[in-house]
Image 1 (cartoon, rainbow, N blue to C red):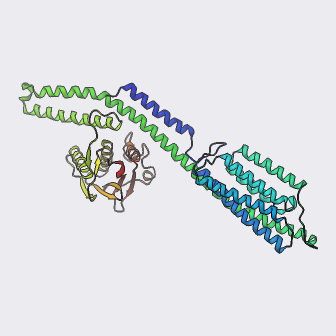
Image 2: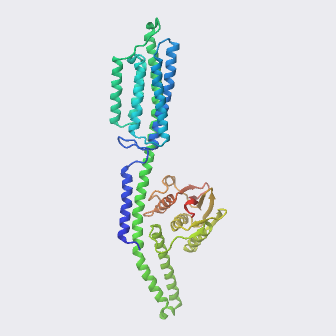
Image 3: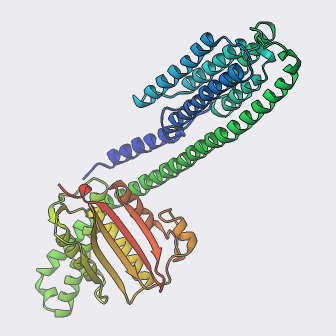
Length: 454
């Protein structure tokens, strides 16, 4: 047997690992305070900046064309084109960085927004400086910074933007207006302010909404990660208790088995048919207890000599059904086999206990009818247990697999489905539950055959 001290040490190490994961407090791609982790969230936000930059390039090209050709305003097309090419190159570099799986940290987003501010400052410098109504576009960069970056990085970008606007107040290339255009300068400025406001409002509404959606998705992933860490912590503690109890029960059960074996050979006891029959029943009960202890230890990774063995889906189901029927001698379990061509798998005690749990729950709610359906869907084994009981309450379906969620009203109820969901999840499968329209419920375990086959 595994030494009790080793078992406790293993549990402590597992709990420490779970604590470290929970202490990290965030799944991949979720920003910590002052940082942005390198996964889906960071990449999605950088892609948003890339899209915004494409819109900025297209908008600047249109604005320059309208000003130059439509309004007759002479602009330095060469330097302005250089800035546009720089934005295009920055976008290509960003897309290449994402495609190569580069780390998208808060620093990367800060540099991207900083370069956007520098590019906007350069274009405004070449087209009238602070007299250009499009200076309000700085607000878009600051809004995105406030959403994407930490407060410290946002303050840095605010300082840079303020300094840029201050430079544009003092130094810029004046607009060269067509002859007589000075008279319409104020009207053009008002029209430019209106266009800049519409662009600002539209882009802020669209992109901030999308960034906020990304952040909400990250928060949901964090909540799911914390829930899973809590469940794994609960399972470790339950496994520690169950394994410890199994180890402690092993010795007295072995002693009982030896004593009963001696009694079966004692003439004064075997002379009575009734006593002999009771001894046989006691021996069977002890054997059943030893089998349960073995199952617990196998599930905990501390086998007592019985190794998993090769079998097939149909043989596994047949043995499982036969054993369950022996445990419920007065009950007839209905079996429906729709699996198709049989396939070799490794017999798994944990999986057997999982199906037993679901069958036991169905029997508790529907003593007169329980059906086990075995089928195949693609590369997955599906085990569906149907009953004719009252079904699941809506709140139970919403919290399926969470500990202590049960309609039975028993202390500790709900642990069966909790363990079912977590064991199946470890095997790469899923557990689904639904109520039937004409009464009863169906619990379906779906397992990839790749996790069971050799």
